[in-house]
Image 1 (cartoon, helix red, strand yellow):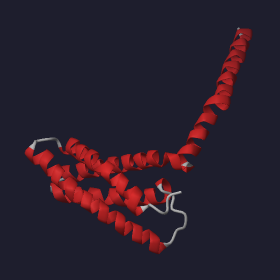
Image 2 (tube, rainbow, N blue to C red; image 1 turned 90 degrees about the vertical axis):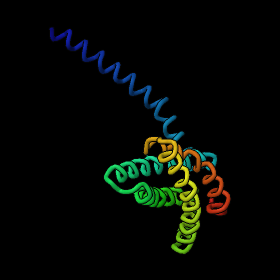
Image 3 (cartoon, one colour; image 1 turned 135 degrees about the vertical axis):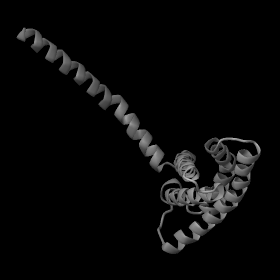
Length: 170
């Protein structure tokens, strides 16, 4: 019996060693290469924007749904969720998506002001869409919010890229 267990242990170690070698020689380098591309390559800027925007949308939808279902009005729940998601997205876009070279409080606040202006113009348009989807079409709160975000997001990307972060992108 003990020799059978020894053979089994040897086989398990060899299989584990093969899996570890495969991971080390093929999968891990691909992950590192993609991570480097995603984090630092200018060509990945749109991908970074989508990831950050997606995270912001998830944060906004979850907060909106939570606040709305806890009794806040549609308008108040939407403003609170929107402002928190907006701030999260700006900080991530500033440092991660567009990778602004030099940090200065003045530049940061100036860009944050422009970003907020754009986002609140987007917010007003989005609030109209949300009202239309929920109150006039009878859509659910969360699906209407997701649809509203999907409509206004592409316009926002192009304005951010061309006007707000234009000269600071790497």
